Image 1 (cartoon, rainbow, N blue to C red):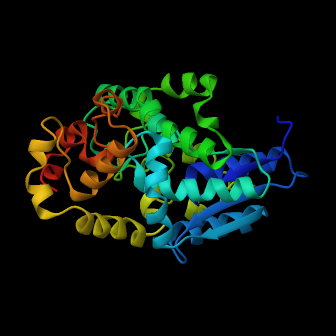
Image 2: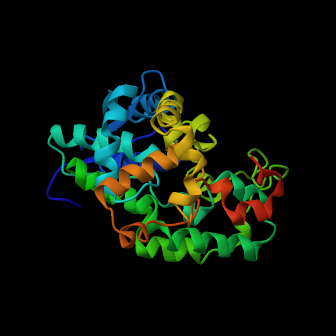
Length: 312
């Protein structure tokens, strides 16, 4: 329900695609606009186009270059007030500006699904239902520092409001009140006799309608892709390469002197932190940035479940 036209962020992944499919089914006579962005030929663009064609949406596909993305880094760091999640924030910022130019004020997004259903790949290693649930609670209660912060601040910076249906309170109550063992992964197990119990099996199976498919089977059972990877590996690699040149070896070797606490773990983070300090020089500003690791499989919790990741 809205007084203005609503658009949809469509990455081609399960979460955003399901939202589009549900709304398209609820409002069959309404024109649904979907938006995606990436470097030409990247995985997300290909997948999003397939979903848009399947659902019959009015699809808008935008391409960006590495140069455009690098040029936007400094203002994105300012808008998100953080040196974390920049990889994903830059493409999203470029996209929300395009959406605003098209006249849309509100977009729906798939944020939050991974945190309540256990969609990250390291959840395959959850040892038992109790630890599974504790980690889901930990991820969910920190969303305001991570993905939701990104969606909210980047969206408004670009000129649109991002809404997250998976984080509806009633829906979260139902999902988080579900037996955690139903969310655990076990690829050797096929509860329906056909599909392996992969991440977010519960959500996938709920919309596995053979008579009136919500999504193509290949997408409904597609493995998760990180947004920053899905929009194009060239962007991530170029940001790393740019930082390698922007941060001298002398600066890097003396990082522990400049940053006595929480020294950057790569030249990429050294550069982003330097940009952050240009905007927000006070120590109190730095203290607002979360100290957790943003890549799920690198967190202490994930390494506890799978020690092989420790030195990767």
